[in-house]
Image (cartoon, rainbow, N blue to C red):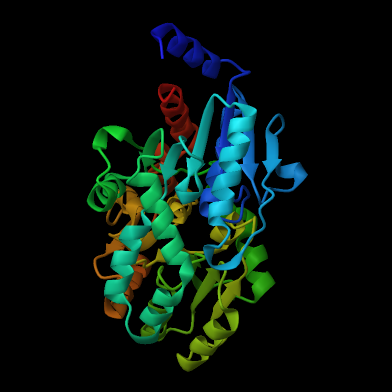
Length: 391
């Protein structure tokens, strides 16, 4: 392409009528990547003609004014069987509408798009097979989702079917190079962020009493919050075991996400925690649960980033998470939280919880300020710059 044409296209992206498409299976408030896309659309709409291409779209009232939407026709299928259809339809819609820039997320990204890599599935697969044994390992091997995702990931990365890549952290860049030989010059580093008017220290005053009364948590209880959909990998069970080992009836656990609620309650009964473990289904108002908690814990064994860790600190909560989480880069030991070296070690989690409770007098305002560099307005300014350079 001639230099004059390149400059013309770059100029179009800077204008309000430049066409930018954000493509994924979902765009809403109930998940991690889905929230990234929704927030990205809200930021970019002020300077670009933004379209969201997705199967699962937010309610009409939650779609930012001025953002166009294209609903993918391919139905949601179990075990990842609809992923290839999602990618085909995203690619088709992108070509039909002649967007100036197409942005994708993960293996569903359209061909020749700027792909924000939230995690490398091959790295997760390698790590999880080292930690799982018996029936859990057999169940993982039998699940076709992983084979489909690994195959599509290889097609995207080995075959260089992208325009440019964005990795959450240098560790994710390392995974891209280790498993797929991706050249470092193809990749920008950019973490996820948080919405400062949604996650802030004022949540405590707004929701602490309301949410505790709603689910029957004593007002003077010490509440540990856990937020995750992939509860097994992110350490819910060892966290429950650690709380049981602390043997303090005043400690309660609130777990939010897509959880097997009956199984969790059976485990709670076995551990002597009945009545002290509260399960909450996935919600678009997850920030309210940050307001009722005292600390946040996510003892994950693999986490490319961990948006909820940053959101917890933005809400003024000290955190206990794994050094394996990308968001651990924001943890300042003793100032806004502590890190676990062995997240499956119940003893280490017990020690971490005790340090959270007794080690320091936490200053919620200082904790919140410690992560201000991850506000979405900062992150998306850099994201837009990457999109502009990709033309």
